[in-house]
Image (tube, rainbow, N blue to C red):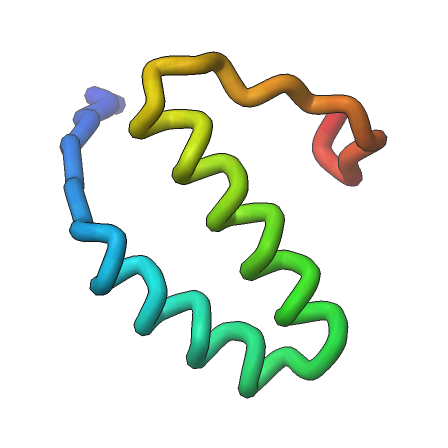
Length: 59
């Protein structure tokens, strides 16, 4: 099996639209996820590494 990696990009406006839908559809949980995603996006575009300080289900 060969793995392929793609690079996608989105503007801040496009990301905001997706996160608005996520928070609307997901209620409180969706809103918290959207806020964390936006914070991570801001860290990424500023060149800083996003620090994971909260436990995750995937670690």
